[in-house]
Image (tube, rainbow, N blue to C red; front, side, top):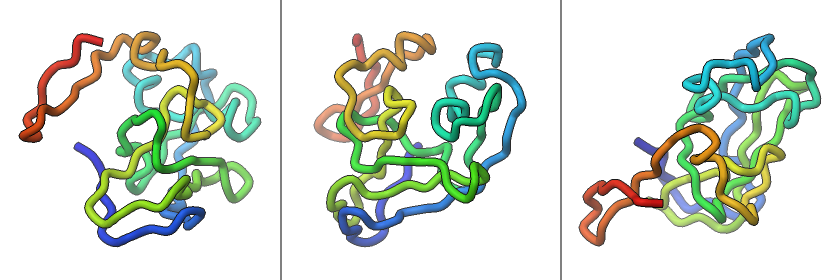
Length: 134
């Protein structure tokens, strides 16, 4: 699963503003299955002991490092805004960097998968999903 651009998107353009459902539980106290799907709202929006599930496409963006979008909280912590970090062409997958809790598109380390116990999947040259051995 993933989200793909239906048109060309310019760098700096707002791609989506997704409302969020706030979960009043500290991120570290959530079940690991929820940690894999929520935004750490304490770090992103400075709201103590709160995590957020993004509606719209917000929780469906896949990881890439570097990603082609960055994200930040919006509307006083009631939404998350996704912004193109570079020009994106029609048909390209829209991605965020899971390692950067502050929403930046580039991270020096790729620890999210290991921390959450997730094995990344990659595609071969024919776009067939194959399990990564990272």
